[in-house]
Image (cartoon, rainbow, N blue to C red):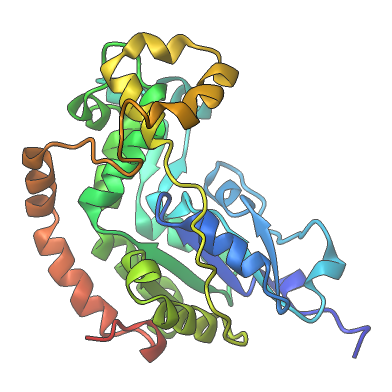
Length: 303
């Protein structure tokens, strides 16, 4: 059996872990990478969303895939951002408030199109998503990219007015993305887990994840990974000039900022902004709950 290479090498990955960003993707990715029955790659899916993409699956190390479940992870794919024109314009303007007109002809934000492109490259794959309550998720995404915004234009409203902010707001309608992948891959091939269960129900989360991937169950580590740079993000909001500091300086002061801005996981959004987001996604969340009932029993949330 040692000379038999898994069909993943020629027919695509076994599992596509497509997102969402800022929903413990690094933590879960490290958990899967550390599992002895799994091989992984990172950021090899998103090229399928570029013009003229090559859909052939080519892992860097074919030996690594031998006899293991192969998982391709790219947490940004669930944003459904397909580049159809000049990708350099997206890179230039994505964090500029009010710059949608500069990029609207260069991109397509379409879960169905993204799902179809992924299926072309990985026709037999399962699809894994982890969703996070939208206000909490957008708060984390906002903190993470705050220093990418122009100085003096770093409010949440201005973040939402950037092309990237607009894409994330659209991606927060989880039912649309889940529906697209169910339609393209089939309900039995799609798993949607919840970020909140990592802390609230870790044993259930691990059991559902491992059952869907098809590997032996292991407990989740208790140490979280890649928490948002919340302290520095809050400092940048209060003192925009700090954004011009060299990265090395910002990294050095990060451990000390908490003395002045306590609460590493502090919320930057106002109560009004949180209420607005929850109202905006309320109907979508009702549809999401109904969709999840159609998925495999391993992906349903216990009540």
